[in-house]
Image (cartoon, rainbow, N blue to C red; front, side, top):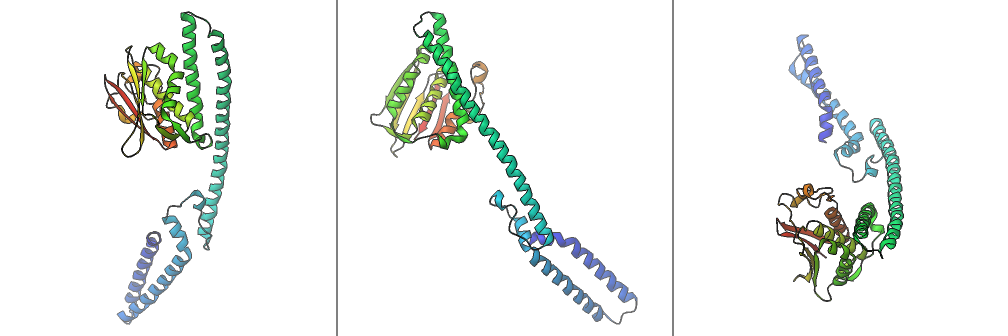
Length: 324
């Protein structure tokens, strides 16, 4: 109604001006009295009100549609209208929506092709890495150890690319089951033993016996790998310990804490550590930082129904807490 009145304010203003002018001319011409002028004005006002009522009734759905926010893009055109202007606008919006759908379908198809290419490329790169690893696994000496370390870094980089590409299609690639948290943590730490040895940092697993969680083993293992990589990257002193502590709270929620003894995170950076590509102050000192590790951890936890928390103290270390 407000939109209808605002649209017809100019019409009402012009009508009032012309009514005043006609009444003035009538009086200057020697009209017989005020009552006749008022009667003529009343008749004219009735005609105006009748026109406005007709206009509002025929365009009411149109004005209501303009005043409301559509629930979805499909509803943007609204129902069929009887007024020519309203029906033309509805048809125009429907055409725009059709063009938008065509563009959206085209971009979605290109994105799916790109993700498919990334997946194929990552799997293709894993084969030569595995071959190189087999060729040097029986070799001794610093050069071969360095090559093996770089192979591990390449493997982690490829996995990060692969899991990042799969985030948008996460619902097609996960399987939730009951997992023994201690077994999963020990399996992941065993896979990362070369990284622990190279950094001369030790894992300490302290998880309650029989602590089960509902999660996807593959995605959860990737989360733990990211947390271990971060913990070891920012632990500069040798002989330190990365602690994995699992327990069940009084409210029944299972918790896994990954605590390192690294350089810590400045308080000003903590609110943004889960943002994509944010490296913060530590990123200037550690060139390997990409800002994607904790971002992926947070995104995957949200999709799995878990919750990720972080706390840190400069010079003491960082604790990432997963709530299942």
